[in-house]
Image (cartoon, rainbow, N blue to C red):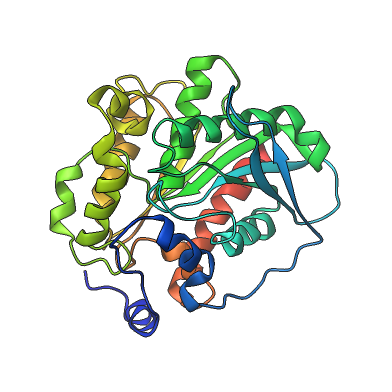
Amino acid sequence: MPLNAELAAFLDAVPLLRYEGEPAAFRAKMDAGMGMRPVTTELPRVADRTVPGPADAPELAVRVYAPSDEPGLPVTVFYHGGGFCIGSIASHDPVARKIAADANCVVVSVEYRLAPEHPYPAAYEDAYAAYAWAREHAADIGGDPGRVAVAGDSAGGSLAAGVCLMARDRGIPQPTFQLLWYPGTGLDAGAHASKPNDPLLPAAALAWFAEHYYARLSDAQRREYAAVGLVPDLSGLAPAHIVVAGEDPLHAEGVAYAERLREAGVPVGLDDHEDLSHGFVSFADFVPPCAEAARSSYAALRDALAKG
């Protein structure tokens, strides 16, 4: 299906990143929003702080967003996208704000370490440490420790899924819910070539991320947590809601992961937006079809957290 006309027109008008050189050169551009000026979702409480990182690793910067001063709100730990190489709390500040407002939850957005300076498993260990901290300290940030979800887009979706596996394997409670926007899962990676023209994740971008992150993983690392779809046993994981985009080269990976979760007995919902691209949640302020698609995933998160 052709890319949605409104989204295509928007992407034609903005300066997209050129994937060449080292990731460090891209980060400031992405943090600045690639020239876009999204609407700021005003919230009563937004605060930066640090939390303990993994053993023998630095503290983690997080940004905490609250939609109200009401105590005992559910919590969502959010991991930004960027191929494990770029992206930050700043680049995904608009998305984190919308999660807090639309899902009526406290959001903890995590500044995990990036490759190639910090290769696997740094990002996954940081993501897990942030989730474990949120469970233990939810009440300190106005949250309910019994209702803690994870969410992420792209690489952040992979991290959220990985945290569920790590929590199961390390013996701490599962998240209440996992919301995964267009995650990479390692399944059906051969389908990438069938969708080479996604404006946000073109073939050149996939090759660039592979050069700086994925190609440096061993098969054993991929099967451990970095390619969640290749893990043999997916049982006992949190209920999931997976969102995919039809023009995205990661589309087949998300669909296949949803099916593997179902086969393992995990409750899972799948939203397939056939005419949207990778990264569409970040364009909700500019493109009405993206906003509509994003609202449906926020609603799934809100409903799951309300049920506990």
